[in-house]
Length: 360
Image 1: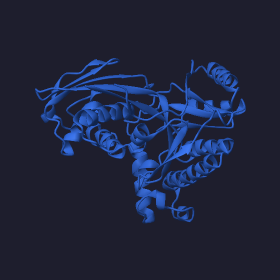
Image 2: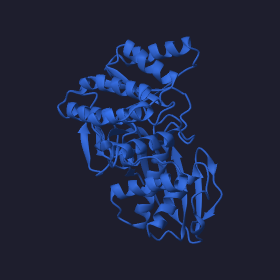
Image 3: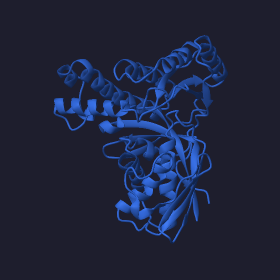
Image 4: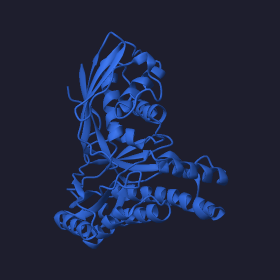
């Protein structure tokens, strides 16, 4: 038996660029999922969740896309992905998970679940998989077993991130660099606000944006929008132009952010965050009134910059603030929410933390 913990993630900047072969800059959060796995000999997969209860046992040999539903599909999908990759998982497993990543907030609770399970199974079976390969197996579980066409950023962040750093990831080559993000040393902090507007990506909106990007790339004759330039955008119009413009400019913002962090110019990232939010709002059209209100209110209260993070249509907003101003920004957001009848927002810690690691 072995136990691993894998975190959720917060994407500092680089939204909807991952499946366009572009650049992203996430960091791990202090929230995660713990998976304890043990071997069985009867070929069954028994899944238990401290939050969701037990799932019906299923035979490993019978795992196929669509055969398991709900939270258990993410864990079962990992076993299926290992089986499909040629690994011997036929004996079956007991898998117990316990997590504290806020669900529906766009902080990648699904990747935390997948990556904790695949890391624990890798350890239990002595497979010796590289971190990148564990992330790719977890992504395959989500893409092909669960049916969510996400990019690889969430899983790569969950396995690779280190404390006080963000992960600069090239989603084409999968080359990764740990970029310094020691907020406290820079006299800064991130206020992370949950809009509590439901974050639902399986309703087709995410898939539609992905298809639009792929269509725009075909029109431009490039492998992916990562290869498109500002000049190429002149060949598009209407919705394809807006979708492609977001990706092209967002990739540029990631590169500018990385350069600033490498140089220790962390405060200069603020305006890039705000520009990213405007692009998601106006060009990619994935924000909602609640997240727009949070971003604008945080900036009015003194934040250096703010943006929605995650796939969109709800979820969280991060605001880069001077240390010591966090309470004032939170209070301003709470007041704005109350004034607009939105109830109460949620607030979470946003401290760059460790990726997947063994804890027992």
